[in-house]
Amino acid sequence: MITTSLPTEQIEVRFADLDLLDERNLLERLLNDQEGAIRAVRASLPQLTAAAKAASERLRHGGRIVYAGAGTSGRLGMIDAAELTPTFSWPPERTVNLVAGGRDSFFAAVENAEDDVTTAEHHYLQANITEHDVILAVAASGTTPYVCRVLQLARQSGALTIGIANNPGTPVLGLSEHAVLLDTGPEVLSGSTRLKAGTAQKIALNLLSTTVMVQLGKVYQNLMVDLVATNEKLVNRANRLVQEAAQIEPQQAVTHLRQANWNVKTAIVTATQGVDAHCARALLDAHHGRLRSVLHQNTPNFPARPLPTGVIVSCQARADNPLHGPQFMRAMALAAAQAGAVGLRANGASDIRAIRDASNLPIIGIQKVFGSPYDVYITPDFGSARLAAQAGADIIAIDATHRPRPVPLPDLIRFIHEELGKFVMADISTSDEGMRAAEYGVDYVATTLSGYTSTSPTLPGPDVQLVQALASHLDIPIVAEGRIQTPHDIRAAREAGANAVVVGTAITNPREITRRLVHAWSE
Ligand SMILES: CC(=O)N[C@H](C=O)[C@@H](O)[C@H](O)[C@H](O)COP(=O)(O)O
Image (cartoon, rainbow, N blue to C red):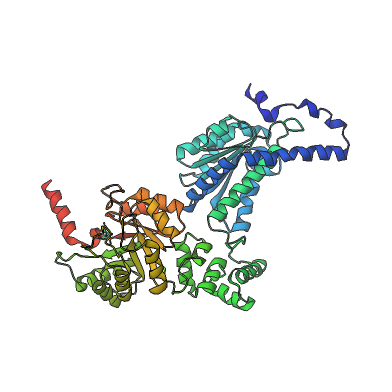
């Protein structure tokens, strides 16, 4: 039978004198064995790392942490869940505990419940688990039927499954996408897995949930800044955090906290970036809530004008298009603004200027340069960047592909930041290019050039995979751009992690839209 061969159930004969030891020796024996817990967790670090990465990724788009367990393992899950709210302001509705024997088993053991798969199914259904959720299934034995059933159902729902068990090769590990083995072996007190197996589980849960919360931007430096002050103790703590992080006096901290509705992160941004609370919230949103990436943008000396999340409309028409000209592009921009666009993109000084005069929306300006020896044509050099900036663009988009260019990329980025005082958007075609641009300190990365270089795929619609790759590697806002034509494309880009989408042709090029519809008639 499987249970007898489980290492955690083995009887260690060398500890057979346990009942003969006095208190001091007994304590020492137990303590020495606890060291095995740390060793087991250390050995699981690669698996814990992968699990933490996958969990932060899944939870970034909503979703809940669902702890599943029985007995000690279930209780440890309940403790971890309960602590996330006071520590990280994690919304309580974003944790779920599936415990064999129900929540009452926290106080009184319900030993027979762990075999009850029907209850597991019942609990599971009640919890409405979806593919957005992360399951943390914990079982010392690795065989607990309740936990195994939850894992099977979770796999069917598409939830992310992380299994933590103390015996190798057991079903809890086999059923999980991320298997974390805490190989603690036999206990000093035979079979008592509340000892070092439980300690290892507690450590693993502590490490995992703290790492995920840090990754989700709940911590700045080593300060728990994701705090909304709702009572006097928290008001005092919030005040100290804002003083510390923004290096300001107590009275100033109170002023910023009041403006920020007692939200610590927002107050730190208003205090350090010279923006109002509305703008601070938009900046935090654009940076996935990560205070560090807002405060350490490589763009120190110019006013913050963040690109909000939403739909940006590119208003461009080439010289051969009857709609070419600033008056038409201005009208396109106004129509887009009336319909809820959060930003505009335009090419060339005269179009940018006409739009700037008519709208307060943030403008991504470009200056296309054709006929040079280089394939790179979107704002390739200092002169073109200056033209777009002087015409009133807030963000200058530049070609940041790996192709040969007239001036080195880092120099162009530095010039736009330091000389022109503008944000930089890197138009790229591959994730490597996006990563390099981010290293050089650009403020936004856009997928604009995917499909337009020899190293990127030719797709009929947007490059959603590229959006996903960029969003999972970078902290800066990601913009999906290129061939976005339908609401479905927009949702796909958003779900892949885009902070905003730029739509051009499908909105502002009636000639192309007509061509497509006419083509459909004759198909
Ligand atoms: C490749 C290139 O030069 N893209 C340009 C960049 O500004 C524009 O021509 C596009 O219209 C813009 O990117 C929006 O894309 P779409 O029009 O596919 O929605």
